[in-house]
Length: 82
View 1: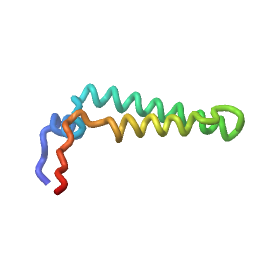
View 2: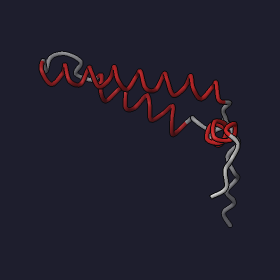
View 3: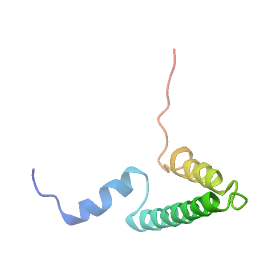
View 4: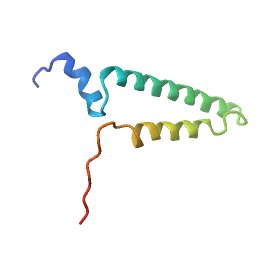
């Protein structure tokens, strides 16, 4: 396997989702923090079922919407159906 420049390793994936390295770093950090806090809310909900009743499912919906549904800034290909 040929060696690639280190800059390529840091730019390849962010570019594939239409972001710069710094944009990707910020987005990934925000996602990670939301997942950690959502997970903590789920643990607390397990101990105290009256707390955070909808927090876990709301976090999953929010993160799915941001990551999958609305993530790519690159234009989507046009799908022609004949």
